[in-house]
Image (cartoon, rainbow, N blue to C red; front, side, top):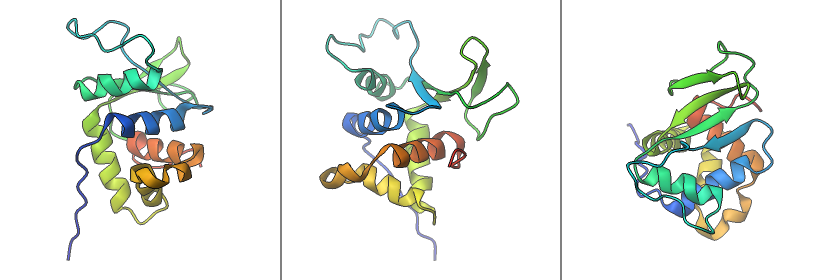
Length: 151
């Protein structure tokens, strides 16, 4: 018997919770968007936090860039996402789309590891307090790298 997990309807709040928790205080992760706007579409409003902007970019069908500051050079990358060594930042940059997040969450929920619990904690709106930095960093690693690399 095969059981398949399907993730649908990722919301703005889901993305904000994931990114805010995974990047605030993280020594190795940061997220950025392109400096130019997309086809004139305003994606930033006054008062938006950075995570709001990242969520809007993703929900508009555009990628954000996850920076891995623990990568030491161009040869140190993980997973299958498009990546590029950024010497200026001394970091590996991964291109991340909403579809990548959906697939990563499905893999996480189907896994037999603790990352499955982390994905459920993110999705549980009534108990989001359990979703902390350690869980968020691990889940984002699983989404970006396909595995948890940094403990």
